[in-house]
Length: 505
Image (cartoon, rainbow, N blue to C red; front, side, top):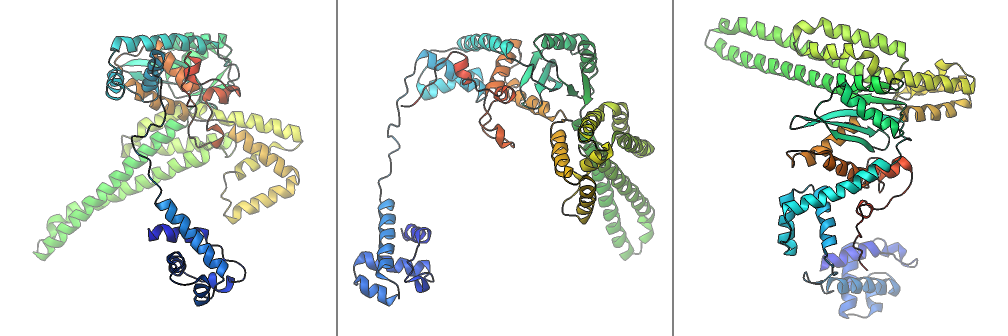
């Protein structure tokens, strides 16, 4: 009880101007004592004010705060069995509740039956009934999916995932995460991908470019169906593979260090017994092994950092410079292949995908050239502003380069800087968003042995119409991928399926 009063006094303490000199210096304990004495009526308010060198107004103020805190502390607590609201449970409500459990809560069919039995004492439902509910909703969802306008998508991202060895082809809009392709197929070859992409083209999809990994069927299908749309490489996978390689080599180096330390301990104990030569050869080999392993791990770490920070980075040098650095890194990895068999697969992947991985740089250079022509300045200055965006603003070198560019560009510097920042932001280079979608889909797939396209269509509808409750981008919160893509509001996904949602009066 005293804690409640003290907190209230601290939060609401506001001394009047006359007693500011002393009242502001009173501790929480002293203010508490003033309020207790006033509430108890042990002394007159005038005497209490005089003893503490504060005004009568201040004393009455503390009494009011304490009185409010006491009333709040003794307010009756609402009972747990108090009725908050009544819910009219109809068959139509049961149907939307089943869909909500399946799609929002990732529940299994038998889990839905158990929830209805345990919470609502409702047993008049079977697995077959739940299946029918899903299929009826899937038919409505399919009609809605096919009628949505996807012509505004500028950047697509394609990928493949598997459910019990069944390929599931996936495609999303990079900017809004709207899913326009989700189909289970028997194959993932050129023909299968080509057919789906041609169907999407007929619906109005014509992106500026797409992003995908090195899947041969995927790329061949797009080249056949969309010959005028470039398929950029995905920097997510090479950066991930390089990271795995670095961690493997660093762990191997750490293991070599541990082995050397163990041998040194054994050597010390052997010397104490006069047998120091017993481990000398093994220790020499261990030291040499550790040195080579540590050096290799350090060198590959440097190459990996170069690839990430100077070659595949968004703000960086021009295409010619990046290609030169890329080839140098690949060459250095090839020279170190005899030292670890883990290097060769990563090196070959990088070598085979160089042009597709750097394709986003061509897009940047094209837009930089357009910006330079528009402002009538040399394009190399736009590139210089671009490279400035990767510099650390806490370093003196950043401000030196910035001052030099400002002297050359004068008032155009800020306009160019903002334009370059927007170009960088609008140029995706990774398929991490479609990878994220695939990870969310797996939460649904693990409950199903067989995935049909009707069910996938319902999932696609739900994910496109479900609003983001939270996001790293605040502008997306409370919006669905469809709303982000089109810029227009739409009804709740349950209402779009024909259900009337319950609303408390």
